Length: 71
Image (cartoon, rainbow, N blue to C red; front, side):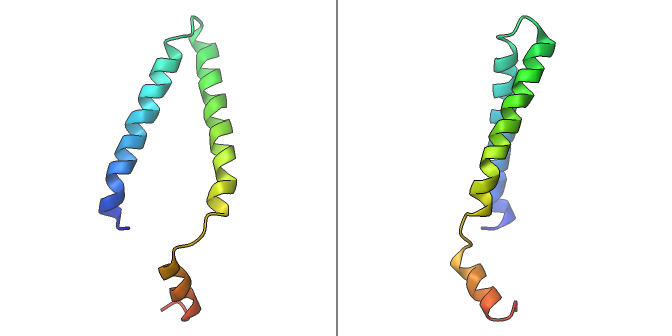
């Protein structure tokens, strides 16, 4: 997957993340507590994704390339 084909997913992730944080913050009367909660949620979300990304299998083309000596 080239960088140009990944760009729509990056843009969607930025827009979805920003809008989710704004909507979540609008439900808190104390904005400081809301920011703490949003960042705690984002941190937990990121920490749960790390094991999935580590154990996600490599594409077959990359495995073949590394088996051929990295050419």
